[in-house]
Image 1: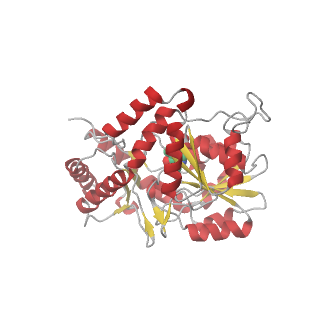
Image 2: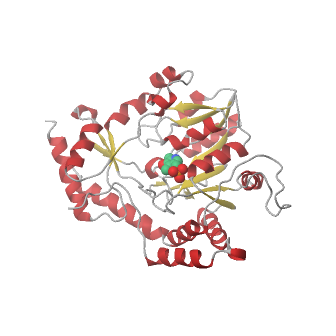
Image 3: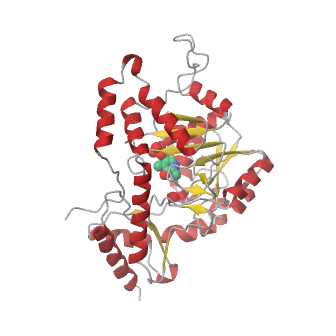
Length: 376
Ligand SMILES: *Cc1c(COP(=O)(O)O)cnc(C)c1O
């Protein structure tokens, strides 16, 4: 039997046709046709004015920080629980990351913890829509506004989620997405930056093209900047996936329901939350084991692996990683972020690939139940 992958895409003939067309026709005067269609369709889908296709979400965050003019001495608040890509670009611009604790229910940045981290040097916050879940964005926006802090919403894991009717990624000053192969909508590698702010949009276009304005004098650069562009083939793949986004999202919710039904009545397990007023796109079905069971995530991952099931650990707190060991005040953050440190050792991302079958989910849940029973 093949191993059950933890994540993966759903590719149909439509994607193959669009990419084939791009590689055949998107050259010369037509080299931008798929970018234009993908960006326009993406902005419309989110209900925002501007969208810029980029090589990754990491580059989107980097450009957002640059566009807000961040640099040495500035602080940026991020949740302690996220993929390091949320935080790494803060170092690229020589600003300082500050890790805030997460909320017990949503596993996203807690509004209270965010407020506690604010200092006169705080210039931006990057809330993350973790695994498709939504943080309390009303509270976060209110606090950010009061302190004049820019919001970069990291919606890399949350295309199709929403918060009080607004799409994930459209809630801050800037929203960023990833189209990495593991994400719900994929271009293999890729990303998108969205915003309603024309000044930010213009600055991003300038910075991502070696410091020249669109349509400017050729080879005439006014600043040293970056080269962050997506290829036509990727844009074509993204457009085809976006035209199928409802289908992709429906499948994600279906997979979550399979798990929910198979695990109903099992005590000691908590799955992803969907608080009232939010819609979770369930990028990764995630289970938190009750600490009372005395079973950690590493053992569960190993046991699942022995049964041919791939899974992933819930993110380690960034403040616990060797990568940030040299950061000033790291010890205070480790002591302060209780919720991050309490949940992380007991969380596992279960297989959530778009080609998963119900029978596979049954097999996974049977194994998981055996694991829980071994505690007693
Ligand atoms: C995947 C991911 C990213 C990074 O995306 P890339 O396209 O790989 O740069 C950033 N933030 C979060 C929360 C992610 O899950």
